[in-house]
Length: 370
Ligand SMILES: [Zn+2]
Image (cartoon, rainbow, N blue to C red):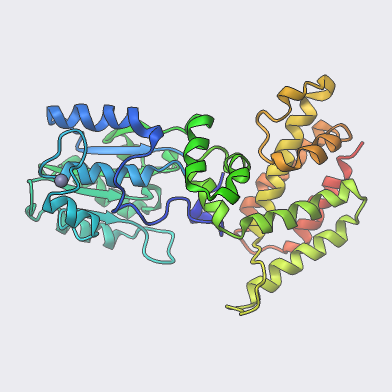
């Protein structure tokens, strides 16, 4: 799963949260359920946990909810006109607090939560409400989470806390139990694609389906992928990987080649030369994606149901090479390889010989061939 905090893939939910003038089309029913009915009854939960994969617009929804809750004229949506709405759009609203990881850090420390708690006891400047957004909630370390827990247990009146998470299970059970959890899902293909096509230029329209597929259906992630150099990186990695079993390239040589790219990138600081920045994570991620597709195709066997061929396949632009290869591979060996790749995600976070890791994976990949 692509998660922007753990790797070099692009940030799925980029910084327009304050300026949005609507929710996403796929969030309409959740908006009605969460906002329209609750605000009318003044029953908005005091702690809300929005849970779902990266790239579906959780953060935008949280900020838009905050804007609506703080709006002084709101009915079914924020009015965008009142002073509160205007301050919000400028990113200067005194009654909203965004708690996130400090720059270049992966953890929200306890000190940040203490500052937030001090803020939370101040009086509201506008309509009486205050909103706190914590994301990603799983980034709070144990002390930070315990500290926030106190605020959740003794809610300051009219202060609403919205937590966001990609990994609900990584949160303290006590945090989860004090929030109303709302699970957000990947939109239906058609809805996501329709939105994505509106974001793409006429020249890019033909890529929309591929991007959405590579992003596992998460539209914002698809958009970010399209803007990054990740596609070029992906192509490079995939061609190298496939060449081992399509063109009998030497597994060890390919491993050397790729690990040299990864190493030389980590050594160089901002080089002016336009080089692709490939991380070990990129290599693991894209070969993982290939192997999953191959396993699905191989399992479908020789049914030869071409209508079904593309269903559930992410790398649809390589479908021809993949389906050709799938018939020549041992399914069980592919599954074994998939397990090794899953382990590799953890291994590359520690001290490891990348070259050796790639060699082992690629030799195993070669051995998948019947
Ligand atoms: Zn307003």
